Amino acid sequence: MREVRIRDTLSGEPRAIDPTEEAGIYACGPTVYSRIHIGNARPYVVFSLLARFLRSEGYRTRLVVNVTDVNDKIYAAAARAGEPSAEFAAKMTAAYFEDTERLGLGRPDAEPLATETIAGIVALIEDLIASGHAYESGGDVYFRVRSFGAYGKLSNRRPEDMDQGEEAGSASLKENRLDFALWKAHKEGEDTHWDSPWGPGRPAWHIECSVMAEQELGASFAIHGGGSDLVFPHHENEIAQSEAVGRPFARIWMHNGMIESDAAKMSKSEGNIFQLSEALDRFGREAVVAYLISGHYRQPLAFGAEQMEQAVAQVERLRNFFREHPVREAGGVSAETPSCCSDETPPASRIESFREALADDFNTPRALAEVFGLVAEANREEVHGAPEAVLAMLEILGLSSLAKEKVHEGAAELKSQVVVQAHGEVLRPEDVLLAEREEARAARDFERADALRDRLAEMGWTVRDSADGPKLVPR
RNA sequence: GGCGCCUUGGCGGAGUGGCUACGCAGCGGCCUGCAAAGCCGUUUACACCGGUUCGAUUCCGGUAGGCGCCUCCA
Image (cartoon, rainbow, N blue to C red):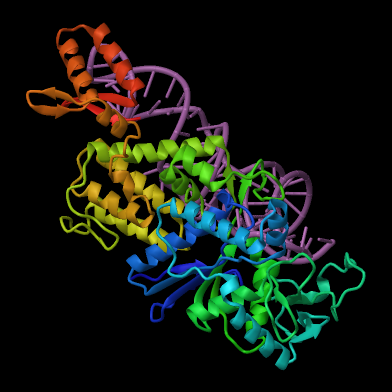
């Protein structure tokens, strides 16, 4: 187990994850008012892989990613769709599960819903009111920002410095314009609501995370994460809600940068979004994952057709490597070092550098460079244990499927369509064509051989001639 | 206006006080019947101006430009 350091937003410094305690990670998930885009997928991938890495290092790890399924935007979107909001939210939650499932990184250990946390939310608000940090006003409940001296510590801003512009609405129920809502009274047209000590209503935005994090991970936990756009006000307010009543909160704050499209943050309001499901359809899960880890998690990452094509090519290079260098030993996440090799061998030192890069503020591009470094080395000349080592590294990055030949989409169909019997053997049509091409090549009838290769290409196969004979590779 | 981040070769993107990141693309070559894959080579990368230093892309100061948050947002 090595020391894993993460840059903490609050202190601005790298902080080691305490190996003696459970590494509880709470990452803010989506508000489900539409299907998620690539930008929303970044934290999902980053925190899933971080959890995977920590486990492989021997940390006791628990990853929690919430779903916020009650919110103003959900009411609005449901109304537009002409559906009850609860039904709409459930549908969008299912779509979110489905989309992220396709990333092939498994599920978080817990995925709590805001709507199933109402009791805890009400209890926390009651505590806040009892301790003077919150107040009821016209059925709403607000957090009294001035009662919490540390307010602003995460986003490094002082309440008095904050924009003094006037509120949009005239009749505010707040004591102070900086105060934020914990509970909102039921309004006309909001069809999902709960009873509370302050009348019917529903939780405001930030409170659910304070409660879900504590319910799932306890009062103090290792890492609280999310997109950098959540630093203020979301995470700042979470700190206020939890710490005002003396509940210690996250020890490390970890924020990922934004995906940028056309040099601007990808966001639903900008309209420059690219849906995750579409990216998965078009480029495949490996390319999407490879793309998302191609930059350091804290930096913004450019998105575009060219970037995705690069990721596709990158992933194809890894597939080609495994085609030429099949894995012999069973590898796995826990494979520290392939048993075959001493510490000084290239595979072992690559794995070491790879893990060191991830331990150093989860530097995935540096880790990826180690993978490609070993691939290039082993492509040059046979390196004992290289395929196993590459696989072990890719396992941690969620890309181990690259070691297996991708299932050719047309193959199953073709197979069922035509089965050719030859010498009692069952041959696939493409195998027959390939054999015919070999005959043509032997007869130096290259025109015919090339025609057969074209035919195979139409069927979705690339032919690769090698010293061991021709190979069929799915395109 | 406040707070923070960034500016690296055609593109994406790491990193370092003096040593090839890595990937993609281009060009030339090897291999090949031709391809594909792979390999080798290749286009003197660090926004600009000062300073510190034996030496700065890498530290300090400034200039210009870009981005994020300050309102919903991963």
